[in-house]
Amino acid sequence: MSERPEKPWAGRRELIKFAGASLCLLVSPVGRAAVDRKPGILAVRVWPAEDYTRVAIECNSPLKFSHFTVKNPDRLVVDLEGIEFNSVLDSLGNKVAPDDPNIKLLRAGRFKPGVVRLVMELKNEVNPQVFELPPAGEYGHRLVLDVYPLEAPDPLLTLLEKKELLPGDPGKPLAEKPEQNVETKSGRPRQGQPVVDRLITITLDPGHGGEDPGAVGRGGSYEKHVTLSVAKRLKAKIDAEPNMRAVLTRNTDYFVPLHMRVQKARRIRSDLFVSIHADAFTRPDANGSSVFALSESGASSSAARYLAQKENASDLIGGVNLDVKDPMLARTLLDLSQTATISDSLKLGKAVLGEIGNINRLHKASVEQAGFAVLKAPDIPSILVETAFISNPEEERRLNDDAYQDKMAEAIIAGIRKYFAKNPPLAKSKLASVN
Image (cartoon, rainbow, N blue to C red; front, side):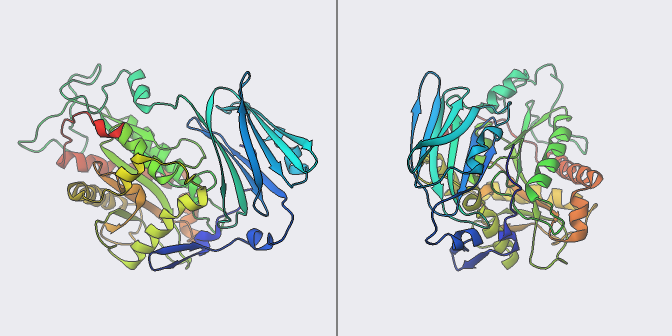
């Protein structure tokens, strides 16, 4: 990805203030200075991914724009009114990497007096979304161009290509592994529990990404990079297990809305959902690792409530197109009648927390609960792991250490093994509700 240096979201340095149930983002210095100023382009950032490519155009004030698509070849055209062509727009051609899955070329030029035209040449037919975002954190006004391939990558097909049994197909053995069952390295299925010969699928969710850097350490570390690194290490360990496979909600640096993370897990009928984060607090001495599960009612502590509010603000920073009506969002995020799932989440969280306590101090000795949007899959035990405080200088150094990241990944998978040793997964029926 080519871009100007990322601006840390100072929201993790308390640009967010909460009042009751409402959340208000303070306007950035760029946004405050934009009052009565002639529109001008400040930066263009490109975030490529298989799922979709995002182009974020940052401006010092709201932009007046229009857009349309053109065929043969496929192009997205965006006209920006009332701005001057500047060096940022002149450098657009260098922003798109040759291996971008969706965009072939991006260029801009003066179309007519007072109008700059952006032309995005596409590698395939796409479903574009063009929308505005208000100032958030240290970002000013943004015009977002999201281009989604018409044929989105299907994680279920990815599993099929590996010639392994899809989770949800009961009663069939794993391909080329007919003797495998849910027995793990840490124990055997409990007496009387059914043996289930099928692949266990775990969704790993590296927190933040793309336009949303997450917390930023005093040494300049970005939470989004730490979480992706730990998640990739954990995925490799899970994939090495004979009866487990892991799928990432993002495998590169791009933004994924919270409900899409949940939806991805449900599409592949995951057995577990593990979200990876690196905490931050106003005081640099705050330290330790934590594990969280969803709460049906109130948060287990004021700190848990505060953290959930900060994590749920990711959509405001990363940027979600609110004009897109997604019925899956309503079904998934508003379904809180999931007592059994939360009970399993707490069991999983306890097993993982016990293992993490062997490699780092625990911030809390028990699993905490709060209303994390990313944990609201009604049918998948889900936990959020805060690996350490990135705002603590000592823990920030540890979070960037390969050995510590590997120990954290090993601790999480050890907890997962212990959970399944006591709670073998049942054969699943196919979930028609997730399509």
